Amino acid sequence: MQITIRCEGADTAGELAASLHQWLLDEPDARRHAEVQLVGAAPVEGELGFVLDLVQLIVGSGFSAGSLGYTVAQWKKMNAPQLAMSFERNGRTVTVSGTDAEEIARVIRQLDEE
Image (cartoon, rainbow, N blue to C red; front, side):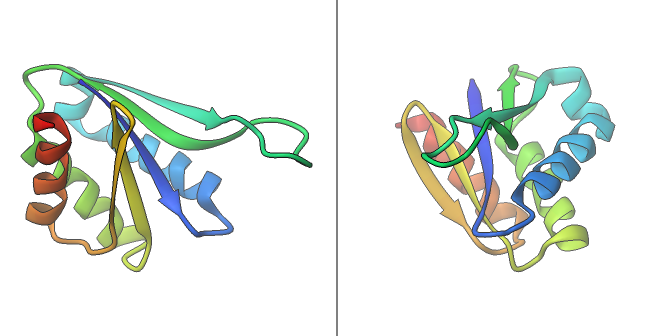
């Protein structure tokens, strides 16, 4: 399963994405069961190049939606509790603004089911 995570509406989205990327790399379960990459969206008109502002995960069967939800919720609580984050899979996007691990896990499970 591939999931893309975007930090929404922040001037520092690139820095926040880099922080989340490192947080996931430091998490033993994520490191073991997911390939975590920092990637950039295509530049919009007027931008000179890519900004690395997306975290992309290719998740294996050993890393559940609950584990990812808990890990992301912990990062949000420590770094950006008010930040809205979008989770995208197969062209479907859902945005979460809270820090509740169960809510984030539920959103990730929904993306996997549909």
